[in-house]
Image 1 (tube, rainbow over the protein chains, first blue to last red):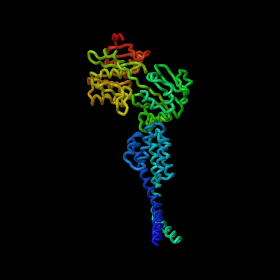
Image 2 (cartoon, rainbow over the protein chains, first blue to last red):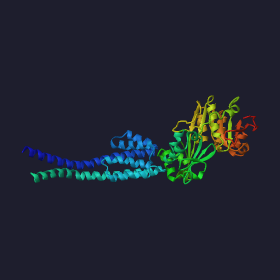
Image 3 (cartoon, each protein chain N blue to C red):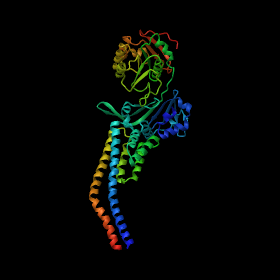
Image 4 (cartoon, chains in turn blue, purple):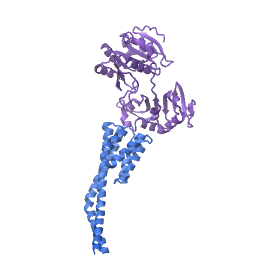
Length: 171
Length: 309
């Protein structure tokens, strides 16, 4: 009997956690997109107002950030200092570090588009491109926030109910 | 010097240089010319060379490695540290000074906005001008311009005859005795890179980089209390007026101007006025056939000074 109760509790808890995890994934996705969007905003400011060369800009941003953003800009800085690849390849290479985050491939593709203008002679083009990327990310954040609000309760309850159903079927 | 320059060449060209050029030859390089769809040309001691695809140096230019648009693009990225936007002004002016004081000139399609060059795009030609400091090359002129007191001096020669090199060394030599302010509009004298003077201009030299000469002369006069002001290639009425202004304040001038000989510059509006006012006390004419060789020296009355150099 004791084992049965323990099993019931285990099933209920793990299925509830599954529901919570699904919801939290959206939350982490929003968090990572926010971090990325802020970092790109700083990069834009470094280009627009500071007219800071990319190697200095990436170093500055990596110093003042944490988590995957630090890794992204540190990796980029390292490649820029090595001077083996061209700027667009360096940007594409750096975006590969985003695969380890909750940011999905669609968002990464948007970020990758900056590679097309990264070494353009026209600063306005780079700023415009960054603006577009930031705007797209912000739009995605809004969508995810709506999704989070709508699905939060649903998945919490669904997880618990799924556990309950499993118990009813097997017990 | 070699490493500094090679670091700004795209990987493909860098490999060509590494595999085909020895240090001795490299130290004699004056120019590296990269033109799209044309062979790379290296100017060394007044002769032109190229590098073949098989890593050999030859004077048969047509056998040379043909520069691609991508080579130019990659080189430009390296020169601008992957950040062309940070070099907007330099690109607009057509050149960038790199560490070591070497100058890289560009050519391409000029983008015009309101009658002014906004930028240069589609770069089709890059020219590395390797800076060579020739210390003591101005020693022969010092005795004619220094004693008994420093005399306002103008060095005259056609392009490529060593005016700037001579001015740079004269500044270095005079700097041991005088406070000198240099206005380096095109970063040719000091070869300033990230604010640091790359060439030896002496202990008592202040340098104002990338500033128009006429504005810079007045600014330095007011701020740095120089005894001598040095500028390269005077060429406008504004420059001439600024020289009049500073000399009337008791500050001496040493400058250069393009010209074949004295007659050539006598007819130029901006200098004519200075000659008639006897502003310059020494006119140093350099030989157009031999780089750095003094041809004639004239005094303020345009009489030749006896020089056996």
